[in-house]
Length: 395
Image 1 (cartoon, helix red, strand yellow):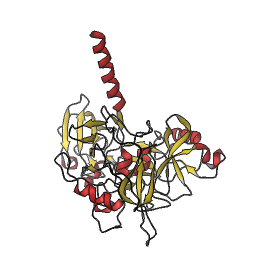
Image 2 (cartoon, rainbow, N blue to C red):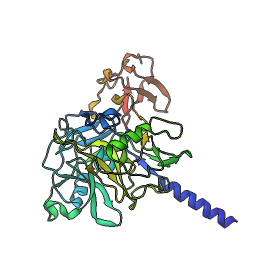
Image 3 (cartoon, rainbow, N blue to C red):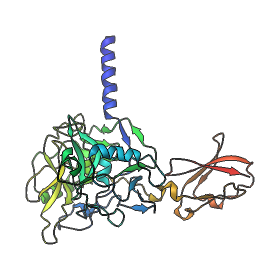
Image 4 (tube, rainbow, N blue to C red):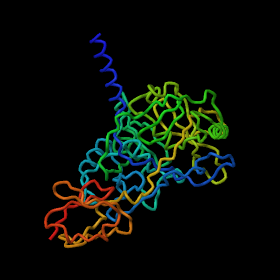
């Protein structure tokens, strides 16, 4: 009996560990699709959740105000995947050296499906000759292939020798990323709610556990999702392509998802609500997610594919809390009575601590506080959204 208990405990621990995932993004951004391509309600632009928002730090970097990641503004150019890894590890940009290759989910998060070639927000990210951008993920059981995002707006697993520097004919570029906020580990990626739904604890979206059993056209899929009642809820919808991609598990194939929680997913194409950016007169295709490996690509809307519905509207509320530490200036230092922040109009939440860790102030109006009565010495100012504290001297 004791051995049986030990085996059960090890199994439970293994299941929990298998679910463990690092949360590097505060929230999942919207696709950026603002155009309407049908009179049927439920397409991508009918739901605006976490509109893409960026800050140009004027130092060659861009802060994503939704995810909390900082990106290299102009990609590093074409190179092999091996050189891309070395390049990111050695990069010094914006006064920082902790750059890295993005994960597939991170790289896909900055694509803008309202645009094409490149599918980026080009008033922030510089247009280059890139056709693809490397991620840090190799295809499971096949290190000859790497997951890459593409200028058309999708993501797929490509042979690493396709890039010019490896003897191929295509341009695979590198774009580095770094964290503002130290990532935290989520022990359980998914939660089975016991009512036919699964909560993704990474994105806080709730998913239909068992997909629709009959494939449908894209228009039919929109109607099905909007009319679904499940687990006592009626606000179900067809997910956009970023939401679908977010549940992909790149350590799995056939299907590319955690089958412990999505056992009925199978190997199919699943419609998204996102239309492929068309010529103005031909909005005939929509993006889908294929579960064999996890690629996102597109199909003609009149063809039939499967449907997996989602609900939820996770929102940060105040995106000003995600800021670049280099853009913050705290002065004077040393200070006598007042502490001023050059981003005072951004409504930043601040905490002032003594060297012993005692919280002396917490709020969004530190510029208006009088600290004359504080004893001389060292203090630490913590600003929400900034990983490091500011060391201040009180005269």
